[in-house]
Amino acid sequence: MKRAYILLAEGFEVIEALAPIDILKRAGVEVRKVAVGSSLSITSSHNHATLHCDTHINDTDLSDGDVLILPGGNPGYINLRESKAVCHAVREYFESGKLIAAICGAPTVLAYANVAKGYNITYHSSVKAEMAEYNYVAKSIVKHNNILTSAGAGRSIEFGIEIAKCLVDSETMSRTKQGMEL
Image 1 (cartoon, rainbow, N blue to C red):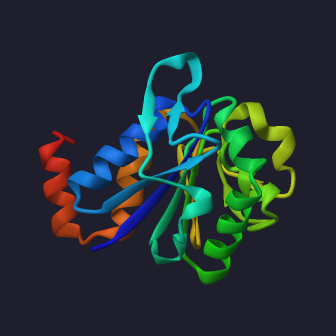
Image 2 (image 1 turned 90 degrees about the horizontal axis):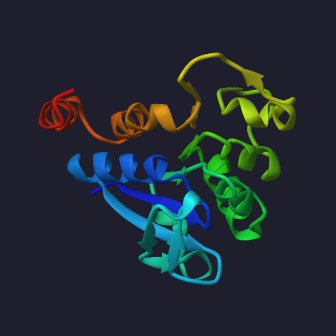
């Protein structure tokens, strides 16, 4: 069974976290919610939701995962990129060729982790100034080698589908999309 780790920090964007979680679980992928911060309960931006995580980043070996998912949201993506443990995990996944999926402002974590410079990526327009060392592509989803990026909240379902496509076979993906009326 494939395993996904989604890193959640205070201020995450609800739809950018829940859409991939839901889609991946429907596709049979094990999803582990990993807290970044002092508590296992992480509150979203705008206080819309609080998710209880399965584990804390400092207590978890993420090396057995197939994908590391970084949702955006403000200040969620800032809290992710300021975490040494998150940047370390991103570097490990990048160097091992494992998939890293980042949406909205979370592609800035790539810059803070000092990986994938020069890659084609997309991101939320609000972080453009921080992404000068990357090739911006004006698309909703961009995949370059093992880096999958998405522009923002409005693309969350598409983001989740693209992550799932990287992890499961086409028959499973077809059943998953059919069950979602896609």
